[in-house]
Length: 505
Image 1 (cartoon, rainbow, N blue to C red):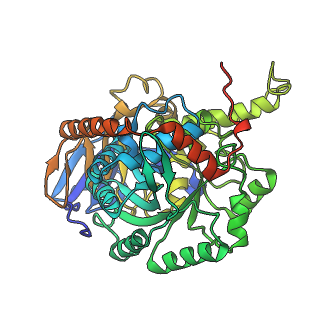
Image 2: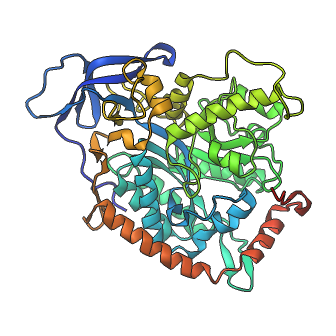
Image 3: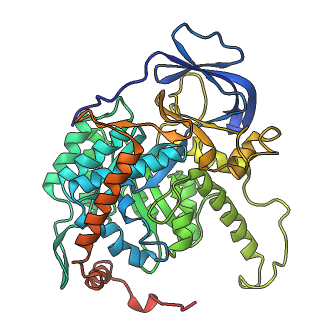
């Protein structure tokens, strides 16, 4: 795997006369109107009014535009694009065999197209960084192709290499999970990539996704110690208590194993269903949490932790197979769910009319914006590089066409922060810059270059390949006995089937 032959930013770009959503003291967001940003190479060189244009600069008229930091997604499985439409009405119990385990029928090339589609969908929605819990790696070739697509897409990412579920057999009659859950070849591959990183001119680093907490303490501690020594800077793990996942209090395990650092290099996704002691430990240690409100609302996880006082919360997409890829949309959803959660507390057993009304609803529009930007950046240990518009930071920027937006009319001039958080959508995003390179211009994704071949691919060609890949995957899926897979899941997770119910609503 090459360390990055993709085009680096060069020269200068001057964004003139935009309205910036600028982070001041204590993360207060203030609009800076009629303000310029000078980008040189891949960094923000200067922020101010009437900046003199360098001779070599590309000039971009940003009057009538709102410029924000790029959005940060702290939990996503980018490879799953071809599975879209499969999980819209499923719980997590059904999703695992029909979603997570479906990497079994992906070829390495399918992995490339799925990963590329997922990354570009994120960019189209204004996301410039993704913590990718990459759990579809059926082989080292699958991982290579997923990493190649990540690099080609232009996104900034931590590719958290994770082990897929391996099978000794899965066909129309049976489903047998392998006992070799962490093959030596894949562990060696992770160490190899850790030594080769970063990729894509520094945009892509290797992390580690780990969910095998049933292993002996000595094994878990040894894995973390060795990977930290090899240069892995960030780890991520699923954490949810429900009838499918069980009731493991993971935060207490992390503390007991002395795995928590300050700041934490472990980020937990979901963290739902926790008792007060677990929440207190999360608050005490400040281990960051990625709330994924669409998944948590649909798949039976319970209330998201986002906007809970004391919790180091961030936002993630999780599965774009059934969720939006827009971090802004998820910020709105998470904020409203947090407010509804508090309203439910004022109801009689959760039913009927609220018995009191809070005149200060939970959270704020500014809190939602920060969850989508600077809080996420700090959680992935990149707070000094991304997440806000500051001189010296990497040039990851999103430009909204406020003047041409229908939804943001009547608010973009008076309150640009509310306009973006409450009233914008993906079609308002005119441009996305990552690492000083345009990845979306004039409302359309820019072509991408595959570094191994030098091929330039525009979105229509990528979509064509995605659909062909999806058809091939669907043919292979016809030979899988999903009922046998569910039986294997019940046995593997020791699920109490009496707690799996069909309400019939």
